[in-house]
Image (cartoon, rainbow, N blue to C red; front, side, top):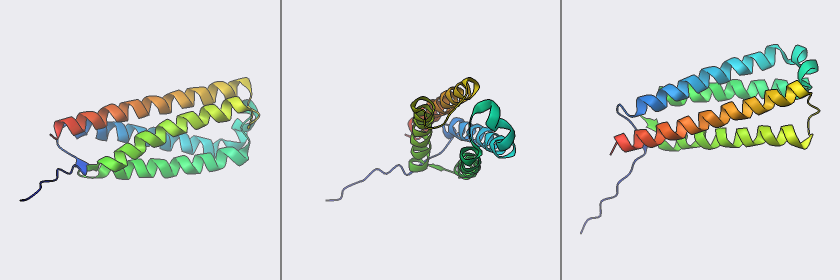
Length: 142
């Protein structure tokens, strides 16, 4: 007697193009935002209240995240685990931004609070779109 195991280690086909596009847009926007955080670390510190000791590592991490997103989007078949990790990472990042904003860990100005809340919303929207894209890609692969 043989047992058949169905494994879906990657999503492919036309359904994955939506996911691939979302990952690319997320990657580009993350990269641009990371570059702005690095280039404007000193000049944004005053208006936002975000110390450079936070914005520089934040910008570097965002550039690393952008590179990871580009690599994932470039796979011929996007691995389900990686796509799910992106969704979880974005959801956790959005939550972390809100925690940083509303716990007073960083002495943000009013503009800084708005900046962080908008950032959390954008990250949450990407998580939602990527989740939708992943589900659609998995459904198309069946």
